[in-house]
Image (cartoon, rainbow, N blue to C red; front, side, top):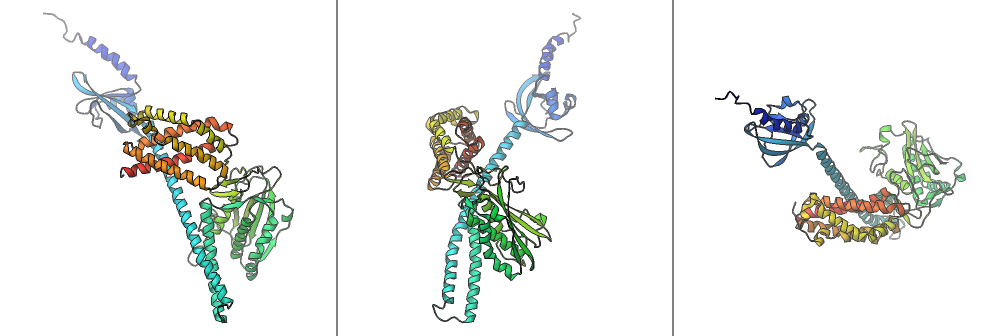
Length: 567
């Protein structure tokens, strides 16, 4: 009988495991071996790092998640100590280990990918929320505009007939009736003024408010506004002082009628807010210094018309609110001053539409100063061109200027036409590239087996219409036009048809969003390649314009697809 130790072959058997263990411990992915009870029997350093423990601490603990061999799942790990959460992708295979059937589990850290997916979802949600908010705002503005027009008709009739009755055309009018007619007329005028304010605000928000941009005099603006508020000032025993010097200033560039409207509003507010015996001052100056508060363009001359009063002033915490719609400093049911709270809102937006701004300074107990900033007609300071331009949501006629730093600044449209022609010339290549990417994209397996016509669907029509829309936008300078309305309607119809087709083919929301992401990326390549050679248009402005159309198409298409599926 041999004296050979029965365990003599063990080193030969363990040698391969020693080599395998060295390899496993050097892997970037976590590896754990789990016995049938769910307890960890082995863990490499990468797995220990995921759990923020040592391999020795993990051995014997329960993994805490069900395992099915051959399947892939995700696991949320709350790391020991700091409580940080990481996400791991688990892949499970069944194997033999130390004579026992166990599960070998690989854990790959996918926290960054999960965070990226969450950021994408948030961006999509924010983009849709913005589109919905803009659509709701346009609907509200359209409704206000229509209702304002409808209200003005009967109000004008009330004013007209009250004046006819007061003239005695229908018979003699007693002094008592005449007094009652005056009250009717005054009330109707007040209501008409409120309706006009709402109409102006709705026009601004809907992008339908046109203002002229021509040279005009600051002195003329002040002298034309004063007679309209002088009677109110006289009744309240207020002195209005015009500081000399306005006649020496160069003209401003703007709409004289709208400037007068702003000054009348500012002067009327000053009269209401100043106690009897006080003073209201109108002063005009010119400055070339950038104003941080007004967000004016640096190295440009501006005319500043200031209306100051010796009233009660505005609390510092309310200064940021007074330009918001329907906000008044003197609020509440017992407030002493009438008004809709729209005057300053409209005044500021009109100022911005003319390339300037409206700002305020105030000290409680000492008074307030409102500053109307308008671009000066300085030599070489304005880039004049035919057509219109857009500042924020307002339409500005007659002059196109670069105005930097203003919140509602105008967009440079010159160059969109050249970009439009470039998109049309590369349309066939662009559609082919997008189609090939959709077919090859791992996230779009739903496109496998589809005919080319099914993959491209209405893509060429959509892109051709977007290209045509860019041409219309440049020619109209951002102003609304029937051609632009038609182009947007075509895009809406195409997006709806596309969403319905994708629903019939069984696409998911994620698939459709991935498709639009590919379209967006390929369009960006064309824009970045083309824009440097098409003039003053910046890449950022061009991308913002094109992506706006794609975002809208994506939103409409996804909503239509969900509607078709009854979601």
